[in-house]
Length: 130
Image (cartoon, rainbow, N blue to C red; front, side, top):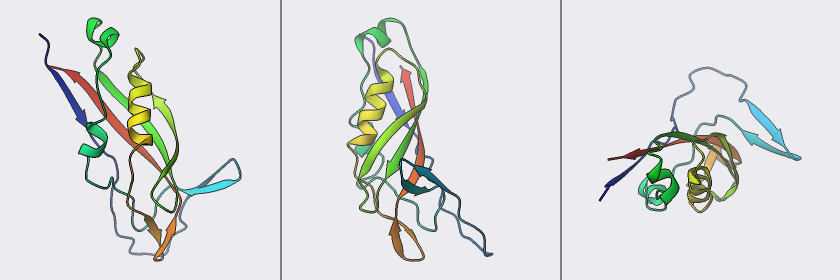
């Protein structure tokens, strides 16, 4: 029997701003999402909140599909994921599984100047058979 190993890396990089800079934003369907803020969101309960929802499809297992899926998550001021978009996928149903896992995850609130804001976050998810 094949053992499955699902790894998840979250590319939420906290950083400190030492100078005054313009914070990048992107407008999506009349809604503005920040691309970088002072306090970036993190999955409530940790990375396991996403990884616990991941699984391999039978087709992906049979075809020995491994690799990285990049999920773009649009997170609102409350920390809920409004929508997701697959930036780079693997197919075989894994893209949908990764997108759904992120969509169902609650995040901490992103903040800019102490105010909760909407943010766009890219989350790489690695699928690996072991």
